Image 1 (cartoon, rainbow, N blue to C red):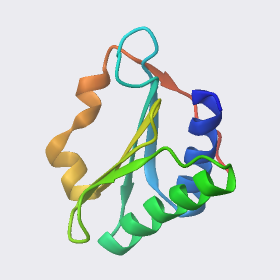
Image 2 (image 1 turned 45 degrees about the vertical axis):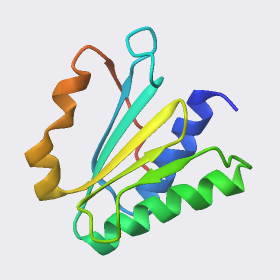
Image 3 (image 1 turned 90 degrees about the vertical axis):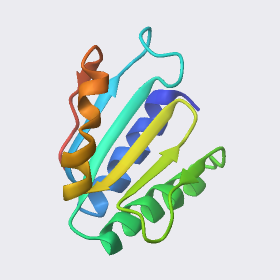
Image 4 (image 1 turned 120 degrees about the horizontal axis):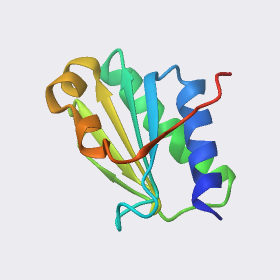
Length: 115
């Protein structure tokens, strides 16, 4: 499965669970860790976990099982490492605090389709 295909099912799963202010950055040729970095916000911890669960379900539907989740049930930030795609799901407050987008300023922002 290509990194673009992983990005596509990931961003669709985020959209299906109403992730907010979703952004994706193409880091191919810039980062050795991943091809794409994705960031989205959730209105609550419950929604944060629903978004991550939706991505995991989409991965399984696409027969993709090479992923890891970092964070706990009480976290305001969960990281989902899908190999070539890394997804950060934050509560709004945590996203503002950590401001990860500044780390990816050298990447090209990917235009995401709205469903």
